Amino acid sequence: MRANENLAIIGKQVILVPYEKEHVPKYHEWMKSPFLQEMTGSEPLSLDEEYAMQQSWRNDNDKCTFIVLSKDPNTEVKNSDLQDTNHMIGDVNFYLNNTDNPHEAELEVMIAEQQYAGKGVATEVLHLMMQYAVNDIGVDDFVVRIKDTNNASIHIFENKLGFKETERAPVFKEVTLRRSVCDDLKASLNQWTSHANRIKYALE
View: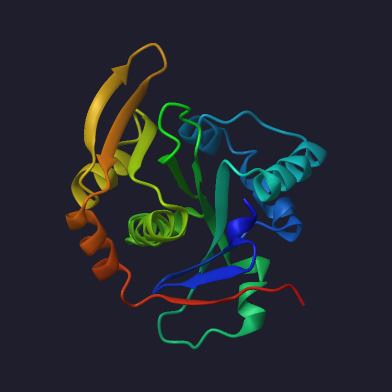
């Protein structure tokens, strides 16, 4: 999706930046992990296929992704920080793939660097992404499909974000949770992201 190609969103612990070809080698290394493949329901790709996928994420109008960078809460962000692949810790994306409801977004988040797990990073990433999806893209429903063994992710969506389980698919070992956008959620998202800043993202 080109809507976010010039946007960086700066939070307390993270920065969201567009997925660029410079990010692909590290992302490719992450996705060699059997654990991450299992948790994300992904198949391993070749490096060339990963570059092609990056272009698809950039150009297709029905999907949006940001790379998640770590951020020191006490340090001012410089432009060079936005392009430092050493700070990559994960990604977050959504698909607009429901033909019956074009305003429904299927969310996915991955914190690939395990030292950042359990520190509220994924929750902040989702706050920022959902606020962007609602305010900039016009999303009015969210859905997530999570492996039924991924208790940490299920906990975040149910207990931090107010999603409700709507379906279990034992064959796929998958849980579906949903939340509709309402005035209460919009107010919460605005409160949760009140600290965030947006700046222009441009490769040097």
